[in-house]
Length: 119
Image (cartoon, rainbow, N blue to C red; front, side, top):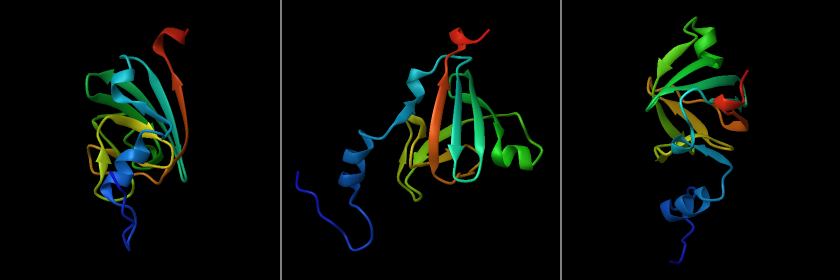
C-alpha cells in the first residue's frame, strides 16, 4: 500500500504501520500485580494492573489532585489527537489516555516490574 503525505501530519495508514515499531507495553502482556512506571515529559506515573481492564494509578496528575492511588481504566495511547491504540498501556513517544479523559504529555521512558519479581 502506497503511503501519502498529507499537508497536516501523517496518514492513518502511516500511523498504524509505525505503531508496530514503537517501544510499548501491551495490555495483554500484563498479569494482575504487575507494575508499569511511565515517565512523561512532566510526571512519573506508577501503574499497577489490579484486574482485567482496571489499573491502580498514582503519581503525576493523580498526586497533584490528591487522588492517588486511583482505580481506573486505561483507554490506550494516543499520538496527541483522536487516533488511539487501545491495546497499549504505555508507549514511548505517545500520550497515555486514562478513563477519566486525562491525557498525559508524551511518554519518555517505560519500566515494567513483573509481580513475580517483587519481594
